[in-house]
Image 1 (cartoon, helix red, strand yellow):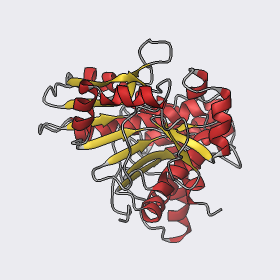
Image 2: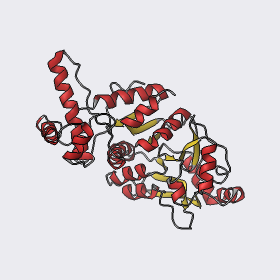
Image 3: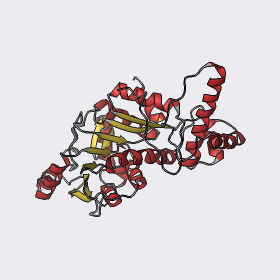
Image 4: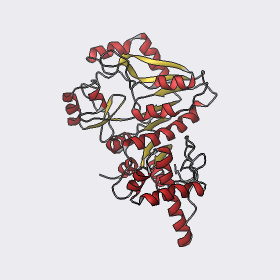
Length: 351
């Protein structure tokens, strides 16, 4: 299960992926010094070319001067790190990915840079952009296949950003299945249903769940989920060759609350039951178990399985999601993970 010899996805936007090769063993101070400089230059390259940070922002994140940030970006180019992909890996990311694989039995794991000097971290927007680039590359490995696939797609902003970064291709033989109800609380389309984006990108057939994400009550949920079309889509989802999914938080002001799927009182009730996150509407406790609550009786999203029988790859990052990501990993809901340094370290902590 070790990640030591695995390589990560290549990056778009003409920047080399820092997972592309491992650091050479350090032999003596000169080699160590060069590797450390390359490591720092690789971080600066990610921030500048992928996350779109300015040199001032890079300097703040890394705890260096603006002039040094400028020189690092230039050094990355001159050293051949910036071509079409970032060739030099951020060694700590590789180590974290290997540790996560071992701790949680993951089949694949990728960790993008997000940490600077001291407590400095890349902002959520920057982390999301980096995750989207890596996520798109992972998705394309599956979507580019000629063999017909059934692909389940969950919800989440990072997942949506990754799908938007996927290269357009013609794969009409694939079938894209949404795991969440297509109807929002006000009767409009659910904007968290991002599977249609995937289908459009590859010109594939799209299957959606004809139901609201959260039904009015348990009886309504059973009626929605008993509909013939719903059952057809749900049965197809059981055949999925791969699933891509995100995770959300459960807290005041979380997306499900802001968008009207649950009330402030329901948020408080879920937190009282120990909820720290949710996947496609299913609330999850800190130890990874699904929470049996009145909300769960109303959620129409497809059921989750632990451990998954086929690849289920989670994409999420940013400090706010660290606890939710760790909970999902503890529950064994994912077989693959794409996240950032901060969340990786958090998931490896022992309480």
